[in-house]
Image (cartoon, rainbow, N blue to C red):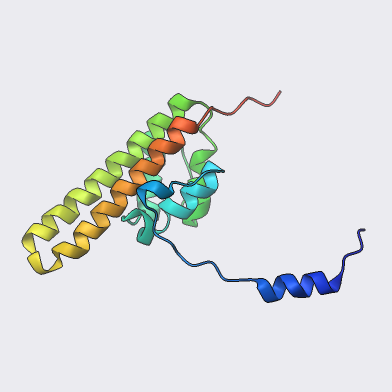
Length: 150
């Protein structure tokens, strides 16, 4: 077991700052682990503009051809992503997600037309969903696939 300095731990704790939710912009597309990015972005309606319910995730999995249990949304998304091995798989999954987003934003557009005083709110959600779709495109572009474990 390694020895560690309690003073360092105390300093780290004192310097700890809580993370705040930041909206993603076109220029701010994240680099890194795509699973973490998807969980942070897709499952946070304040970031992606739409709410993906358990039912939505189950429907996405069914359309993708995977059978998953209904449980916590993060685990459901992880279960779906476990079936993605190639860039073609990822593209097919993202096409299904984009179709779901389109369906939800079409509803937002209809609501904005019927309730003009709320138009600004729905336009903001639609813009966030477009930014999320750009993140999906960036992930797909960078995705190289997963090698099979032998």
